Image 1 (tube, rainbow, N blue to C red):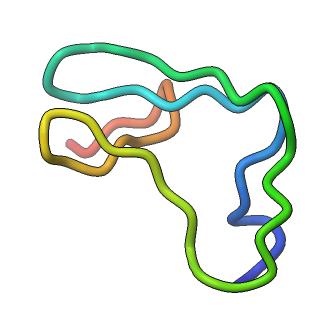
Image 2: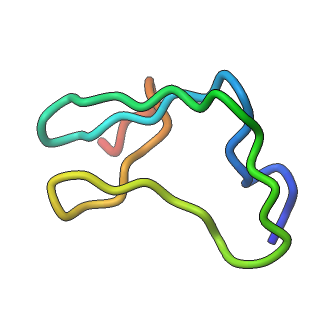
Length: 52
């Protein structure tokens, strides 16, 4: 996993279904895996990104 893919302080993730947002308040320290956030049974996207 690339270090660039890890959530860092200040990142915001948004649910594309209901609009809830999560603000990351501390850098991810995972050494393996691919951390993600989910809501409404779907993976959340970085806020401001669009899938269209």
